[in-house]
Length: 233
Ligand code: DHB
Ligand code: MG
Image 1 (tube, rainbow, N blue to C red):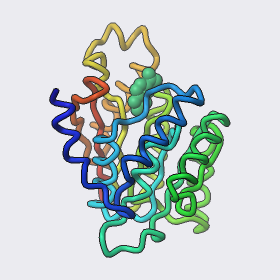
Image 2: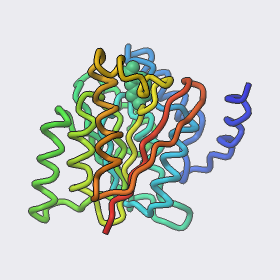
Image 3: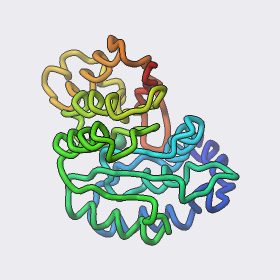
């Protein structure tokens, strides 16, 4: 019931500054019909990410883990009222070629494919390449990074994301609570995904390059949480 109540804050989608409900529903339906797992962020979480990117004034956004582009569609609408929506650039990295195909179809249908590039490949290979391009001045650093891919590599993604960020840039990592499982040391020993998420929380907390905090969330997809980090300097 609380989910239904909190969803009311989503009602006012006003294109081009937020995706419409029919756009989001079509993206979700296409992903489901194409066999993608139903593990995208919820609409409330997508809107939250969009608003965080807007608050950060991020015009260049990186996402690791596209899946069906549900969160990507939200992030691609992060330019606020008065901004030119074409000023927003989103790079989204997806390992699975089938997911990337569905994501591109969803982005096209959502009318945002002009602002989004889907990079197909393993994050552990694509992110270092992006970093080389940023260092060579061939690519702008990012003001907002959302990490939501294979949890085993969370720390590797986070470490490169810090280096890819503008000073003061925002980084968010999904799924760092997992119904409380992150707090269970035994589960951490058995499950490499839990271990990967524990590692990013523990190391980000000690990382002098960032200030970081975990925000626990409850919603349509249960009890979980985001790691929020802001790059110093
Ligand atoms: C899973 C992955 C996610 O990114 C998520 O938000 C929920 C579940 C999973 O792999 O099970
Ligand atoms: Mg996730």
